[in-house]
Length: 228
Image (cartoon, rainbow, N blue to C red; front, side, top):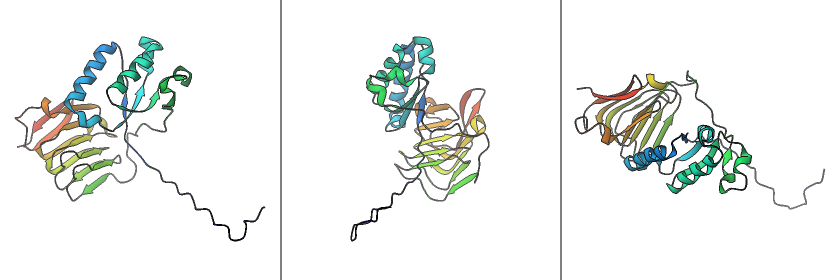
């Protein structure tokens, strides 16, 4: 062992922290023109939902239907729309070698969520959720005593209960799937979602705006209904 030189400055300790982030997983399929047209429609309706959010692209279906050239078609098209590409799945690294997309990480350490939550099953927030804040709780239900502001986001493994105006975005069912629901005292949201179904404000019309409401899955469709 070599002793440190007398008077040498000690090296700092390296500290590590785990960090969980939410990414969108997109799985384009043929015909690509129709798929991108549908994406453009959603980008126009809810641009804030995609802004700054990491996107993982699952290329398995696109490659199976369109061959190797589909990889660059998909990735070029997504980048041209300003999406933040963070990784790819469903493609061998050799397929992207020598392309601008070789930098994208493959085999990201994400995981499918379990059907049954572990640990605490309810998160209670007894204050408003301000604009720009993001509440993510995979363990179960989220209950908020107060308003969810425009520009805020609430994501829950189970159901979401908001005792106040629900603005911003609310996505339930990350673990519970289609059994989850969203309840709010006043529906003024930009976007709501349960499991893999989403709707933006333009889809439910003025008749529900400002009213107590619930959001639930019903036979493969997202249903919104007034509670008063």
